[in-house]
Image (tube, rainbow, N blue to C red; front, top):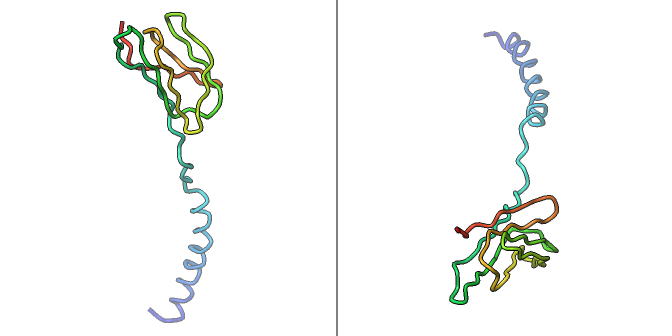
Length: 110
């Protein structure tokens, strides 16, 4: 191929690729920031005194409300590490509400 013809054909193609590259990068899906771990909580096995321990993690530091099917409930303060522990509570199915999120606790079977 003649050098002059190559420049006429390849020049516009090279220029078009330089123009298209930023548009393609802008259209590419952006990676999301690190996802916040999902909050979890669990009830331990029944202790000798008939009570259980309730613990959780992955919450936002601050207040949350614990609900129990046996009538036990109240506010718990979530630590800076996102966790909490409530010792010696009645065996029940528990859930934790923080903001608009409700987390069902695992570990209790009746």
